[in-house]
Image 1 (tube, rainbow, N blue to C red):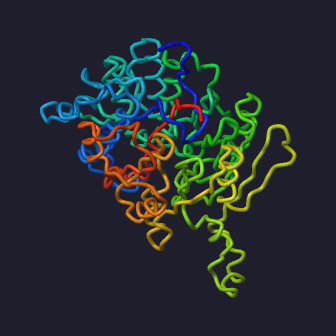
Image 2: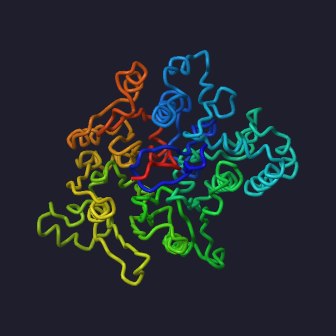
Image 3: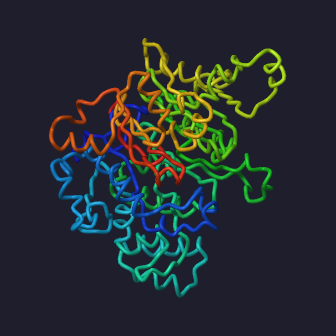
Length: 481
């Protein structure tokens, strides 16, 4: 790669996507059992073959067509030929695509494990976390890098012996870290089930040669002093941060959610770290209810265009102010804070005078107008077309969690029918990925020709995992916007 081209730099949510980190569904997802699903942060168990071949493989193909087209253009029939048994999609197989634009975490993990010193340290670290015996630790050291990478992620050896739990949430690469300009802010997961994820990712970022030029720009948030003495009710003082709660909305402005997964103390430390390292000039703290329904701020809203956002209507200005309620209802419910959002915006040059927003729409409007210099009317597309109960149902299946491939071209789930109608009403085309890939292959459409559309992806099984395509991506490089 030429030295004048940045490997990682993200200054917006909507600049044309050029490079990202992903992880395709591994065999560990097929080993989640009902009794452990919630402990492993899954709402349900998924069918592995469907989630791979019927759903996620389309995600891989559409990403490659936009970011690394020479890998797939004119080859899809060959790639998906049953005789090839999906080898193109398997990180440990010689026929794996190995794109340096759509970068698979398992591939990176395998490559660092060829270093004997790293392999010994990582085996010891994983065994410590998982409580393995000394004999098991010695046994793990003998596996090849390819097999060991699979074991670390799936928890299962080649003989199908489960050595420790899988880490099924590894598909949600947004949560492992976030690229903010040319820095990477690493996560600190809130749940024990994600501890091994954080360890593996830390080794990848600090040891893989792809990230060699970024190592001085990796930000890790320290734990609070004597954090291990805090009682459970002191959770807000613990430092937990997940990437779904961080949005880079401009080169100078980052949003950080305080949620079920990201603590107030983590937001506090992140503000200071980002200002002290001169990464951004503004940080807005967005406090949302600490409910599993919402989890991260990117389950409540994401950006589509400079002046267009998709969001959950119950957090709209109209809903917060109860404009549709009669006077008696408004007075009776006036003190309810179930769906209350608080926004506090800190500016590096004037920390003592934060700016407050009393609703989400005002914050997003301010971003569009003042951070992105947008003169057009700021518009909101609402989950479920803002119709009850479809608004809540479709937010649960990630209607608000879209990924922008470029401004105005986003990926979403096909099961969110009412949200698709809302996109159409807002002037967007609704495209289905299978037909779109056929159009790409026969030359009637191209990624460059698309504008103002939502690309619907098959999602019956993916949606059970409670994360959309925004969750399943860690952008490393977007065109400056």
